[in-house]
Image (cartoon, rainbow, N blue to C red):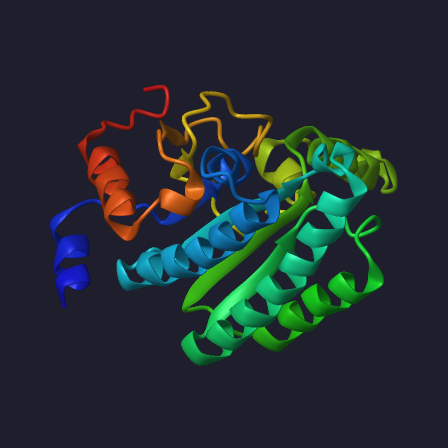
Length: 236
């Protein structure tokens, strides 16, 4: 009831995107293994997802792994892929219970077959849901997405394509998803890192100082209150 009251009192974003940054630095500052930072971040993501749904946020996107993250050590990448498999399994359980449609954003050719199959299974089993939407951006980069979209366009008869914003949107990973209203990046880093370059043209950004494992439901509410205070003009 408390969450519903909060959402009734303020403007809630339709689409919230989160860049859950700072897991490694959180672990380092606490003299813990890097993997523990990722594990705590994974748990935090599940908690924040539930909170977002409770507040009535219809679309939620997590940027789990960028196209540049492959440059990390093999050991770290292997561990992350294992975490992502657990993440997909856990979110699928939640999705089937709460009617959440799961969508994978990003490349599918570089992740291992088991993870690819799990993502495909989650998308298939939840494809008819329209109550909530969870987007997992995994092996995703804004520039890479645009390049892939252009390559798709090059395979069709360009003479039949009337080029416009709407038509270009059709070739993006997010073609069925509204642009993010609010993007939160944790850890205090104040850069976009190329996240949703096309879609974020008029998104509101909040660069939150806490590392993601420390980002609580109360912190999310604080960000939403800040979003509600802003005047969005969309260039007008």
